[in-house]
Length: 296
Length: 61
Image 1: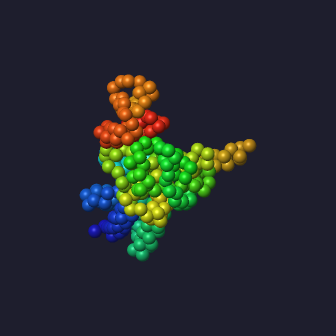
Image 2: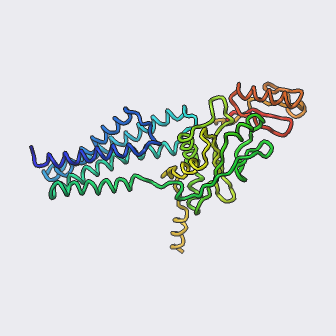
């Protein structure tokens, strides 16, 4: 056995455990089927293996071995493609689709998690090699903390205030608070909508948030998350019963209209609050304004 | 070009409001109009929208 066997082993174990831990947390984003999990754990194992051998390779003066990492990079880009394709295919069969922005966000997360795992493997092996197993474990703990921090993005409740508002009809126009949602003509449908419908008003806390929640992908993500958690009163052939999110052009508030099967205001508000702010939807116009201020 | 929304049928109690053609249904009264609209909504998989008191349209979204 070479000097590096145990350090590499530590790196691989840490990385694989970290990948398992990260799979556990994304219950909303991924169908937690066994086969899906196996794919990602196996890829995580490969990633952490590659990360772990990098330092020993350098110490052995096998500098070219590091080019393996580039192979890994292209491999994990493939993971992103795979996730994107699968989820896009499945999206058309969802009662309420995830939307392209959400899917892209999930795909990016899956790719980047493999890099985090790789990094964790590299760091723990390095820690072990420079001193002893305890520094290796310390490095592992640090990398887990870093991974956790990088992994968890912002949540909607950080950027908006959420309040309940009962949907109502003005003639055939459906409103949540003062925001127009859609035209529903039939009195029968109107009754159903009033019975099952719930409305929520998202008031942005600042100007950046206003642009972020205006993003159609972000709004679809809200509808999807609420639907997954609370169910939806809808079927194919009832297109009138559709959850929608519309925007108040005046002040940037967004009205979310949903038809959950579990009518629980508090739960719904906490679910909307926990919706991730999609990184592709985040806009920061005030940053630009600040910079322009600097120029002048 | 892709059409995203289009009118599948119009239902009215006032023939002067909608020009005759395929997919136009004339009804005697409001109750009949609502029944026809409900049926067509289910059949055509579109949404029944109310355009004024006398006209419904079924729109595919």
